[in-house]
Length: 389
Image 1 (cartoon, rainbow, N blue to C red):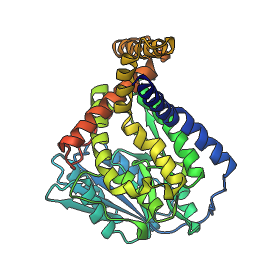
Image 2: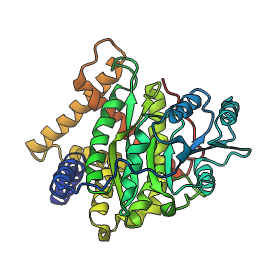
Image 3: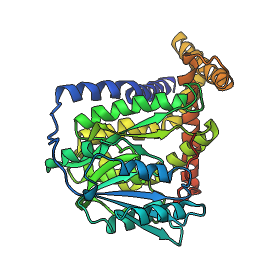
């Protein structure tokens, strides 16, 4: 029994190490070894449709639209299509005013709330152009972002291009989003390496693009993470999903850690639901895509369960050898650092050594709750906008 438990224990530890440490190293090495300069033509332009689904975004939507209108891209080749999922604040009034001022804005104020996926399906049907650019209602794109996205479509191999999302913390790096900002920098680095291989595992919802002919209608019978689903379907069809770091959009950090915690719970519940329609990509026949999907996403979604099992088995094997005692105490130290980080994070002095343990524990706790919500089927498909600073 001890031997079997020990084998399971070390296998679980290896899975965690593989996902969080070995995979980034492996994908980095592969990206450098097999890097192929993606074809692009700096002067290449083509008509694009920018799609935005909104719900109660009166605080951000005008700035988002006006930022698009400042683009260096030929405005005669841009149509902005916005769908409001029965917004109940001043969102519709703001967009109506802007659409009367700028004729390239097409607005669909839907009278029945159906969820973001249904809205995006309708917006795609009403898009006139071959290249679709998806944005969030609170994403502020740089003026040259569209051009950097579009220039890659000179190659037929490219099915989609993921831009770079920068999270901005207004509270001098000790506010509610400090940990999120640093985590996102690491995540963006992974997307860059995957992009070099043409296998970005999930686009940034704030800014990404695809060919319209490759769009797969988003399921609406159950919650689906639209940006993840849309971009992964590009890979399933044998096309490249690449990463363009110069195509930048900015978003403000979540207003509080409580709001961020709820967002993570919701996201993981929906990701679990999305997995059912993307399970084919986990098949080893998809090669590097399957490996990246397992390593970068699936293992991490289930990491709370894996970590809990490691802790329980470690407790049972505590007296077997000194090694088990050392690993157990390391876990306890990590938890203590997380708790201390929680209480110190609002103080003037917030040691960096506390930031990552706290954020890692917080994230996995949220993932666990999200998993329970998925199992209990209590997560709806309706999008709730996240308050930002």
